[in-house]
Every structure is written in structure tokens, then in C-alpha cells.
Image (cartoon, rainbow, N blue to C red; front, side, top):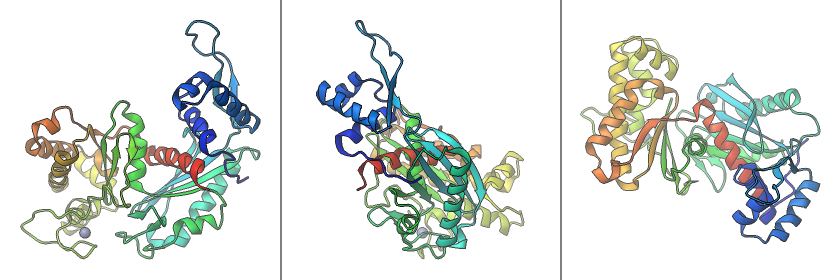
Length: 380
Ligand SMILES: [Zn+2]
């Protein structure tokens, strides 16, 4: 069953506050929304009547009558989200609070082109829904992470690397033909950043680097994803200093991606006669102390760190979190840290944390849940 959330505006704000766990009583809602208690109560009753909220049990008493607890109704709905990589797709069904109901990973070649890839994802969603969600619980939205730049205005992919056939493909329209629901199409590093920020309470400004087949970065400003015009955080085509010259897929020489991405490292290892098919193989080689792999990863980390040096000085984040399949290679983070500590202003690094990403493999799915709930409460 596909059905849009029947709420928007102030009522949507109240539902979001409960879904995100920020509010668990009518009193919390009144305090956080600034609405009058009577007005909150009226809207909460409507949300309960609509089958979206349930009220039960008793909260912590602050003296006086114990407040009754508000929570999402189990039948409020589910979100279907996917995180597309070069060779695989990670799929999940989440409840409206973003809690995974089921997550699975399937092989999927992005070079098969957008139609086949997106149809395969939609088929997989339908199979998961049939197996894991009772028929009366509606699907409320579809979210997809794309490993390339996405224009937030058109929700199309724009000049991606290593994604033949995807340029300007109308991803949202293609999915909308199958699902008459709010549809989120977002760069994968942005989704990862939105998921990661949930794991850093109290930290408002983050840079979340995704080191996988490509290199991405998502930027969280004052607790919110900063998209800019769509390419905010895209560090892959920053020019790096080099004695040699490598032409990047974008047509310019010496982009960061041409030296430090998983794809670049795999090409260099293959040239050295070492067989690798995915970035995770590089991590295995590093763990097995293969010197060529360790040296390449260390150099990649230093190059990424040098680019981050500029950004850390400029943006002064609280956290630089490093995730993605290549981040499991320990020398990568060590080299990034060394470059940033060495070159950044003391004031910029005084309380800076450069750390492995915390949200784990489902970071992008969790981020998709957060952003998709927002979309479902605002998209007409
Ligand atoms: Zn480039």
C-alpha cells in the first residue's frame, strides 16, 4: 500500500518531533513547537485519529501528574531506502523514526545504467515490503543515494564519474512513475553525513568524508545538511600538487580523485601486478602487510589530508569523520590526521576530532530516513 503522509505544516512538525525522539509528551511538543497547549492537544488528537501517533504508559514525573507518552503508531508507515554503490546496493526498510526494520545488500553494477539499476532496486523494495511489512502498513516514501553529484532542484545526476548513461537521467521521475510518493534522490556522501550526525550529539559542524571507489564529503552546518547548489562538499575534483600528471575522468589533470580514490588505488595496484576488484580488497592487502598497498593508502591519506587542511582552516568543523570502504585501512586515517595536524591553524584544530565514522555501514540508509521523513512532511 502506497500512501502519502496526510499531514503537513505545524502538524507535520509535531509528528517529526515525536518521530525523531525529541518529544515524548504533549508538554514536550508545546515547549519545542511554541504552540499553545490547547492547540498541541487538538493536533495530537488528529494525529492519533489518523493512526499516526499512539499515546500510552507514563513518562517520568516532574512532580504532579505523570505525562502520558507519545510515540509513533506501529502502523504509521515505512520508508524504503537504498544506497547505491559501484558494485552493490544496500537496501533497507525503516519505520518513520528511521529505525531499520530490515537491511540487506545485493550485488548491483551501476554501469548497467539507470533504468535497469533503478528497476532492480524497486523490485527489491517490493520483495522486502511483501516479506517484512504487514499489508495495512503504508509505504510513505522512497529514498535513493547516488555515488555522484545530484542537482537538488531537478533530482537528476549531473556529470558523474564511472556512471555511464546516468548523466541528466531523471531519477526521481523514473521512480515516481512506479511510486506516487515523496521521492528523495541524494548524493551518497550527503546521506552518509546526515546519518553520521546522529552519532555526534552536541557537535553541530561536521565534515564526513566517504573514501570508497570515489571520494566524497558531506557537510553538516549547525546540525543540518548543507547542500549548497548540490555539489557542496564535493572534494573529488580539487587539484592536488604532483610531480607527475594524471588525467581525471572529468577531463582535468591531477584531481584528488585521480590519485586518492579507491578506483585510482585499484588501478595503481593492477599496474603493479596485484589483483584487486573492489576497495575492500585494498584493505585486506594492507592488513596482510603488502607494502605496495600500504604505501599507496598512506599517500592517498596524505593527499586527502592536504585538501582537508584548506577546508578545516576555512570551515573550522567540530568533527572530521572518515567512513567508506577504504576507511578500514588504518594508515588512511593516520595520514589524514598527520596532514591536518601539521598544517592547520592551532585554533582550528584545538578541539577538532578526526575520527572513524561511527554510524557504520548503514549510515547512508539512516541519513536517507531522516531526510526522507522531512521530504514526506514537506513535499506537496
Ligand atoms: Zn576530476
